[in-house]
Image (cartoon, rainbow, N blue to C red; front, top):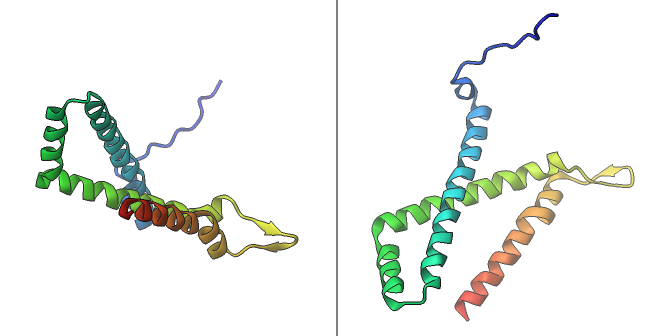
Amino acid sequence: MRRPLVRPYPKDWFLRTGAYRLFMLRELTSVCIAGYLVFMLWWLYQLGKGDTESFRSLLSIAKHPVSIGLHTIALIAAAWHSITWFNLTPLVMPMRIGEDRVPNVVIAIAMGYGPWLVVSGFVLWATLH
C-alpha cells in the first residue's frame, strides 16, 4: 500500500504573498480579541466582589498608559477583524433575488456595516444619556 503524497510546506509560507499576510493578520486579531475577552472576564469577576478597594484598584489600572494602549490595540484589532469579515460576507454567502445576484456592496452593508452602525449608535446614545 502506497503512502499519500504529503508536500512539505515551509514555515514561512504565509509571508510569500500579500494576501496570505493579510489573512494571517486577520487571524492574529482573533487571538488579540480572545485575550481581551479573558481580561474583561477577570475585570467583571473583580467587580463582582463588591468591595470598593477592588473597584479603586481597577480604576487605577484602567488609567495607566499601558492599559489605555492595550485597549486601543484591542479596539483596532476588533475593527480590522469586523471590517474584513463584513467584506468577506458576500463571498461566503452570495444572495439572489430571482435570477439576479444581489450586489456585494448591498450584502456587506445590509448584513454587516448597517447593523454595526445601528448597534454602535444605540450604545453611543445609551452612554451619553
